[in-house]
Image (tube, rainbow, N blue to C red; front, side):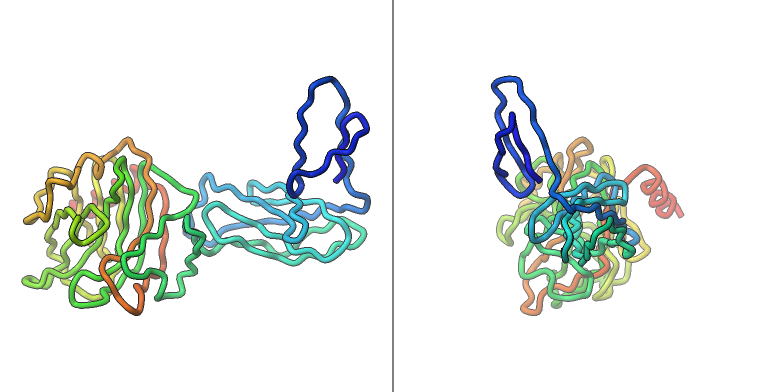
Length: 305
């Protein structure tokens, strides 16, 4: 691409980017490189991923030339030659495809599919199993913040105590609200914990008993909707509000319930490792999305049943 202002060529300030300060009237001309052809293609998402409002971009990996993308389609103009296109998303790992441009426009037959969740630290989750989370690690989902959301994941206890993956969110406080499940050693039933603080000594807990028989692996789902938190353990649900009775707390004066059940705050959220395990914390089949009244009503019906 060649850009001129009143006949004077403007140098690119970055890949495919030109900046100019205009102080008088004139003519800006943009000339496409001779022999450039249009490449078009399609992109989609693996079933179950949260896609509403996702931003997608496409660029040539070597030259940095940027195209356009939206509504499941992308387009970019490139010269003759071999190219690698990078189709990127705010929420999912980028996908690369190779394209050969001869002397005509190209339609890419293979659809680009996003499959891996992206986190704000640049890591990706391919749902293949263990080792994603290390001791005390937090992974925030990239490109998303919602007032009402759900996260679900297969988690597994890594010792005889409380070392297990959980789900956390920020709702108007510098301290994350964290939800995880573990075994009540007296009843051998699941116990739900909502806790604040990032370390062992500064934590502030509320524990909720259940009548759900404990097992080392389970499907954990956390739905934050309005002024309620719904915790799903496999197919069994518990509704927790700020008024729900809880067990003997730890440092509960610092719990700050108003920023846990905060219906108006837009929240960032992710998964975390509670405790320590030298082998890492296996987390599989992670999905998240926006919670709504229909989902809440479905859970309420299950609770009534």
